[in-house]
Image (cartoon, rainbow, N blue to C red; front, side, top):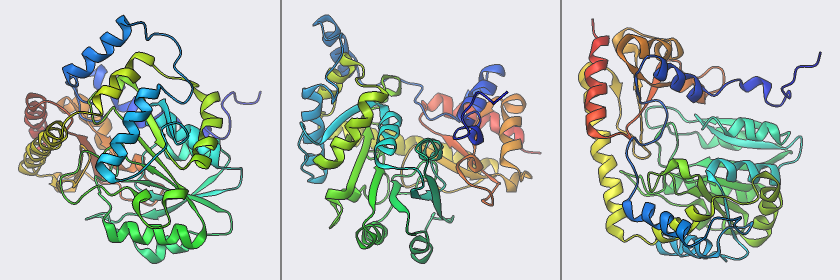
Length: 384
């Protein structure tokens, strides 16, 4: 009998996040593997959702998204980056950034197309590319610093290359791409007439450097689909409100796929996010500084135990080298960790193709201080 799972998904198996989260539940471990906060988002945003429900905003939203949210997204892009987007023709609301990514890749890729990825990459990228019948070409980001070789980037371009997928700030590396790096990427896209898809969900969690949308660079505004979401910025990952911003021709293509993926997403949460995006600067500043304190707390604790760790410039993930503690297999290490010390992490190799390093693990610090302190205390049990 033919296997029930399509060959386009068969190579990917179960998500590493599902596996490590299951281990965390089984052993009652602190879950520093999956990237979600263990605290709620702002009260004013949750109250706005309740108000929207009570006001009767409980039926299907318009397919592109609630008009008020699309206007708020347009204002957000103008306020922070000077980007102008038409809320009616250029902005679409999706079921989180993952839903936005799926619709975008299905809309823009044909079977046989190639997509340039920077490695390590978020684990949803390759399955999305495969579902579209396309394939990836990979440019390694080399630690420390997770830099890339411009010549290696140029060498990935071939006659069937369709688009470049960029994640900055990068999950899992924590890298924030610099302006010179982005100029190199933009020049490549313009020179070879490539589309760009950018995953910018950690745009407001940057500690060193600055977040620069690729769409702001010369020649990129008309060829870039920018993806972001409210989950990371407002600590409400379960609401799954994401969006795409693009020039109208690209936005029309994305909407053609979106209407058959989810069509519309949670109406009251969209109304709440329209209010959330207008939060004052001190909210966004507080978000960044709160995560900076958590980052420093966890990284110092890991270093004290004996891990080799560099504080990430962005996101809420820190990568630690396990070799100083006598381990050299990140998958075996992460499978052992919940039972042995009661902490869950994710192997960095889950974000790599074959041949990448196998001695790094990713810890999420989107947790309250007591959880981070408890995790560090438990991890001390790894020392001889």
